[in-house]
Length: 184
Image 1 (tube, rainbow, N blue to C red):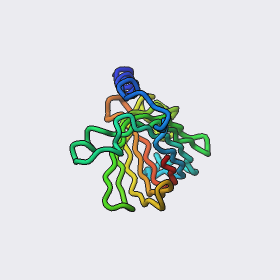
Image 2 (image 1 turned 90 degrees about the horizontal axis):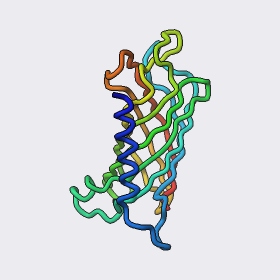
Image 3 (image 1 turned 90 degrees about the vertical axis):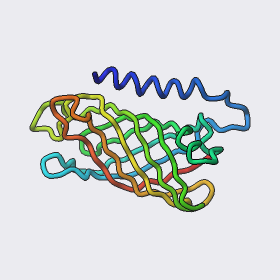
């Protein structure tokens, strides 16, 4: 089941890249790069100590910037790939998926993301928490952001990965933090 999930996520990202229009000299390949720092928000024995740096790259193959209606925004998510790294030898993740953006004003926005991740967290060792049960996870994230100018933005972020109880163990991985993004 996990391989099917990862295959679906990888297939969706590949399809997004293949179905997007060819990039002309004036178009940017990257839509945004984002760097953040977060901390675990897990409870008690599943809490992970340390700081978790992250990096995410966003692509806009469906022209979300050109979306004008609510339905346009729903049908034109950005594609993202990224990683979260443990500074204390804990769980690391690589993730990919889709991000939808809702602009409240010119300055304030909300990003909602859904996709998949692969992690090196413990699969079944109760002495190495969190225990995630399988390498492949669902990955969800949200960011409440502020556009400083047309390129720079800051965000409060929250991220969660789990296997939705498709494996025997499912402590999940949850983080909250701050990020800085640069839109091209």
